[in-house]
Length: 156
Image (cartoon, rainbow, N blue to C red):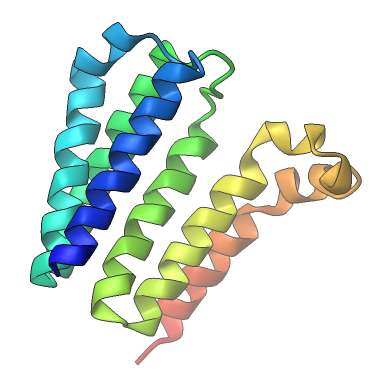
């Protein structure tokens, strides 16, 4: 567990240094409430993995997603403020819960949310390899949510 905590700290600190060194966001933005929400939530994610607490991982992941989305929107140049980014981040938060509880349903929900966020993102048109299918993905992504809803309705 101690090696994982050290690894987690090294990854987080190196990403912060990368953000500062590349001038992706101003240093002052690291003391704003959205970043502090992200930072505290990230610490709670580490604690949840150390204690194998999947509910804490989900709650902290949601807090980190919200904090990161608001912080990025306010301080990172070029950050997409489209709601689909938040949906994708929430899907990633649900994946954090799956990594602890290993329940297939959690993985399916996380995958649907993440893919829905990716498919709904208007910036998909700017990716050359996806540009030809981007309009279809942008239009029909709700079918992923629909399929998940049908699964819940038919599930015993």
